[in-house]
Each structure stands twice: as structure tokens, then as C-alpha cells.
Length: 230
Image (cartoon, rainbow, N blue to C red):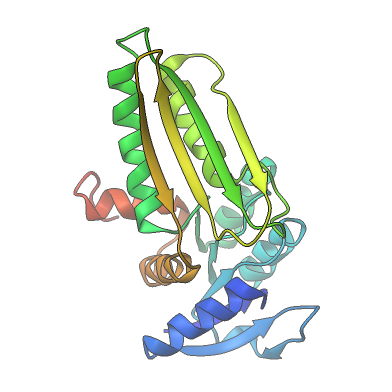
């Protein structure tokens, strides 16, 4: 499997390092800031960790080239319907996710189950907190918005969500249920960006040879036996 990279910032470089450790070849890098190299046509699948404003153009480029794409960039989800149309028209496969950490994906599962249980008790109120490095542009994070959607679908009301942008946090997300007597928290802390890169490679291997529009959670569900392979 040969990879193409959209974006060569910290995450793009992390994906390259993870690919090298896995014995995978980087066929091309497309980045208008740091410079591009290689040919997109040589890639089997592209991984996008660029900028929110660049994602739709990158998806169109992938579709025109007939190459599957994994999108780890967040902050572009207002265009999901358009992206789906491009993918279906182009006959390619796409995987996107608010967070490619396996741990975060399992946190989503825990969040859904915890919400179902706590909803039965009016004493506890749900809340979400997240913290990222000062360079992250979108707030709340895509992961926090995913948690928010999961919990709000159960509670049927808005769940307070707060964001911190400071320092160099790779990412920390907390889902809490608080009462006057006690608090229960489910916390995921990313120590480095390596987990995101490893998850992106899992998605890249999975999407090669497939067509369609998928979330990273579909891959997790398959691993958990909650869905069958297409």
C-alpha cells in the first residue's frame, strides 16, 4: 500500500513516521506551504490532515484521481452531504472521523452506554470538557462535538460543553455526570499524536478496495463484531 499525504504539518509528519515503521511507502505529499513531492497517481490511498478549508478540494482531487481518502481533519462537517455526493459520483471510498484514536472511539461507545444509564436518574447532569494546544483552530473539537451529539441524542437536551486552547495539549476529553453528592467522569488523554496516526493507518488499510462513505466508528464496529464486513 502506497500513501499520499494531504498536509505535511505535525500530523502529516506523524503519519509518515508511522507509515515508515509499518514498512509503507509515501508516494506523494501535497502541501502548498511546506512544498509538495511525488505524484498523486502513484498512491493507493490518501490521508488528509490538512486544514478545514482545504478538505473539500482535497476530496475532489482524490475523487478525480480515483483514489480513496482518509480525512482526519476536523472543522469541515458542514459539508458532509456535499462530500458524500463527490465520493459517490467519483466511485471512491472515504473514511472520516472526529478522532482516529482507538481509545477515543471506544470512549464514544462508553459515552452512549453511560448516557443511557444516567438518564434514568435525574440527580446527575452530563457535561463535556475538552482541552487542546493553542494552535488548534476549531473549538469545540470534533471529538467533543461527537460526544455532545451522542449524549444529547439520549437526553434530548443541550449538554454544556467547554473548550480550552492553551499550551501544548495533544488532546484531553472529559464526559462527566455530576450530582450534589458525587461525580463520575470518563476521561481520555492523548499523550502524543502517535495514536491518531496509527488509527489513520488502520483506516487507510481498511478503505483500500472499498467504495462508499464511512466513519471511523464503522471500522471500530466491525472489530467489535457489531457490523459485518461489506
